Image 1 (cartoon, rainbow, N blue to C red):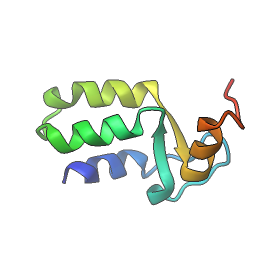
Image 2 (tube, rainbow, N blue to C red; image 1 turned 30 degrees about the horizontal axis):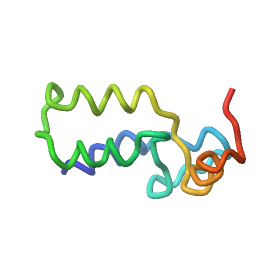
Image 3 (tube, one colour; image 1 turned 120 degrees about the vertical axis):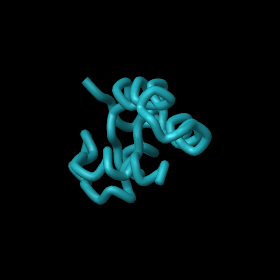
Amino acid sequence: KRITLLNEILDNKSCVHCGESETMCLKFYPHDLKIRRITKNVGTNDKSRQEVFHLINESKVLCSNCWIKAYNDLIEFI
């Protein structure tokens, strides 16, 4: 149920660099690992997820390929 929330958030999103929209390919850059870790450890109500929503708002949505490119400074964001 907890990871389902993230998939629902990503469901209507696409990679800001290439446009990929397959939910399973998308990540929150640069906070994906932290977001997923916190999501697994906290309750399911909105109050306990404030940090998660804050990190999501600070993130850009990237597909796995563009994530690797951004991590290695092969692409930039304006």
